Image (cartoon, rainbow, N blue to C red; front, top):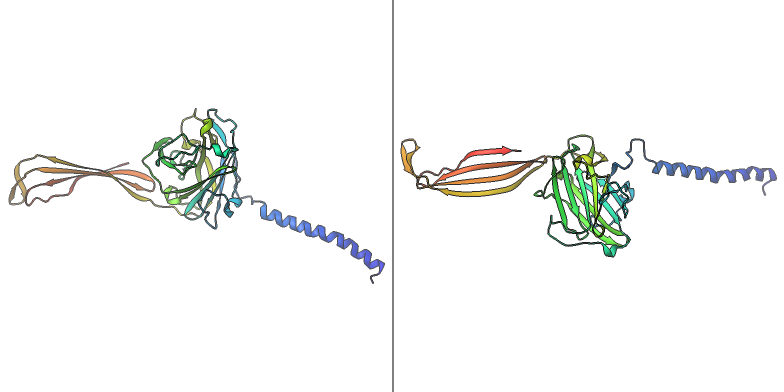
Length: 326
């Protein structure tokens, strides 16, 4: 049996130990959850991407582990019909990335999901539906970028942005999206391959970035960051997407077929075609071929004109003219 002196010595230790253990746990917890001073923090104009160790499933669900770790930004404002107004519904977004893709998850809250308008159409056809649009300026030049839109039915629309607002609807990017309507509203999850973007080689990148939401039944439009219809420009009004480190620059090479024109023309003449030989041309066929070639995100128009002389011994098929225009 312990003596009274020993019992009094043990009693304070019993009281102190839980406080010490609790303090250690609190310190450890703060170390796990407090971001370092170098970690960007989301703000009304800055979103922060987190690196994904495992790619999320693109199914319109928000249950992948990476979305619990990603920073949430929700400072959406209306721009139609009222500029910089309070939105009727809350919208939240998160961004992640890995060596090959950019991932965006957008949660569009709606207390009446049965009233969400989701109309089917062909790709690039706008309907009076709900829409979520992601805008990315990978080069961060405030003049170019891409727009990727989807409605709850999964209809995709995409555009390339030129000159801070001109939309090229002929651009069809390679990207994936999944949508889902649930009791809270609807969700869109995007996977954007980095090879669809143009950005320089650097250890750290900041992209121009924005998200728009259309609420069809109220004819309302929200944006992050705030967008002003009374100002000129689109890319120049985007926010910043920070926190993207360790990705390699991608050199893009794409070829899109253009127009092929074959034009028969009568062109009779007698003249030298080869040294020491004369031929009578029965006619001349002009072939004009155009194509669009993109290097690192910039499209160029390549066109050529070929002539073929329809007479024996005059198999001439070489381009007379090739032009390359930005």
